[in-house]
Image (tube, rainbow, N blue to C red; front, side):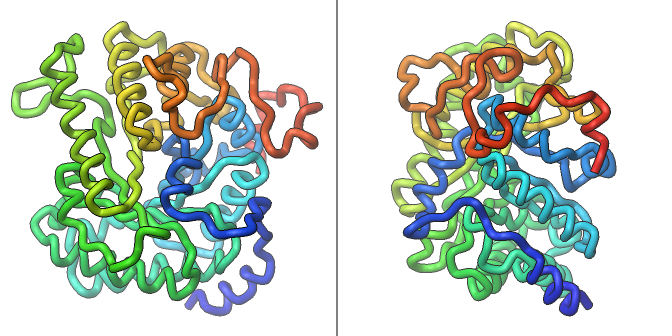
Length: 362
């Protein structure tokens, strides 16, 4: 049904500002991801309504180097056009966009019909963007769960079909696949990886996607005891060992400190944020922060002042070895401090702070 639409919009699609003499490898791409953030710019009505391209500039100035654009619904002409708007804004301001699909139907019932819908959804998106936008990544299913936890063959079969379809459209498209159990690092070894796929296939995994939570009567983080830190390091090291054994790069698709952080963060949240960020930086695994609405007020078009110290900690912590930060960059304060120049600096350095109402335009 969307074939005529795709043919038209592909002619209108812009070219990426990220020109490269040689294609990126997955390992290089992972390091360019640096620190990112999960965003609802294409998932919720509010996120879609409040998005303004200048928000992307604010994210870059804060030290964010990629965004995980979550999408939950079926693809339509309006959503495709909106996705293009997001991708082009990211390219303009030097941020890597990653489109992530929720795939609720397939997670709830991984039968042949829902697998075909998954492949068709991604085929529509991939054909729309074609071979342009070389830094655009596709996260096939974020947080595989539900029946997929018990049907590993169905998950691997779907990944094989989607990856083959996407790479038939663009052989150099960066694709992320995640293990079951809501992308648990312990299950990375269960992924069935196509031979010689290291250059364009990465793994996405989660750790504390919504922060420390009660689990079987236990909290994985209270005050940062030696046992709690050791347990977290063990999970991270599981992913590191998988990378070393498989030859594939990986990315943490989202982590958070838990509870509401729209106000001043607690001492425990700050301690957890520092430990998590430094541990991931130490092993040079890029990560995204969950989620944009906790830190950024889309209606006002500004960062929330309360969580500023926490955001700074999660983006650029002072670790024992600061040079080990993925996507190393200088960021003194993500909200009020000095800002680094973006690739579009020539056209944005003279821009003044926009009115609060501008975030709701467009």
